[in-house]
Image (cartoon, rainbow, N blue to C red; front, side, top):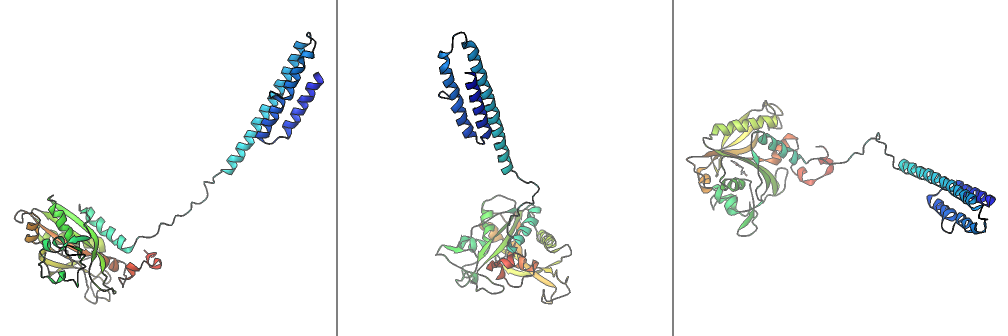
Length: 339
Ligand code: DAH
């Protein structure tokens, strides 16, 4: 009996030693210690052992069983450790490797210019609002004091959708939307896309962008307009920038003006960039016409204001010295990459 037990133990040990898989180890354990295992078989032979020898033999069987179990447990722990280490090794991350670069693309020059203008006015306490691209005749023309027979309303200049709707030709209609809400005072800019029935060339496009500005409060004067826009020009083109205002006509402002900035290329002495004049035109502006205030239910005896309209493409072309507007719309990555 004793030899038999020794033999089983040896056999178990040698099988465990050769085993390199957890599943296989479990199988071997069952073969030796399971219900139908070799050691259990031995116990079945106990009935043939003389009664006086039984306690000693029983103890021997139990000791053998404990030894074999111990060997199995140790082997299993060892195997699991090896597996864990292999897994950790396969999952190792080298945190010192340089990070992968994400290609995030470039901002369009229009976007850069728009954000620059927005930031300047946000810094002055203005709100940025958005108006609809599809407008009615009322918002695009009538409420802006533009009479029914005005040439801008001609189909040659305006894209009409039907009798009622059109693609806005200017962002000025957004002034009306904001004034109608009745919340005063107003300090807002409204960037957006506008549409005109123009042929494409180096300086024209049927769709371009404007940034509208509107300020309404008590006691607003032309001096406020000049001071604000002069400061804006300095922020955008540099602190040495000078401005000048030339009388102009817009139906929705009175008086109206166009504002020029001193040429930031030559400083005003005259160059190819400013066509020798030393000045570059950048926006239209004026004091909001009393009729426009009245139509939007604002009392012109109590409130006054100024408005301005900036051509966004013009700013982008000037700032980045681009000489053909078409480049802004072609989306050629070789061009866009430069910004
Ligand atoms: N809406 C005008 C245009 O498209 C630009 C403009 C001029 C806007 C004067 C204004 C303004 O708000 O006061 O030519």
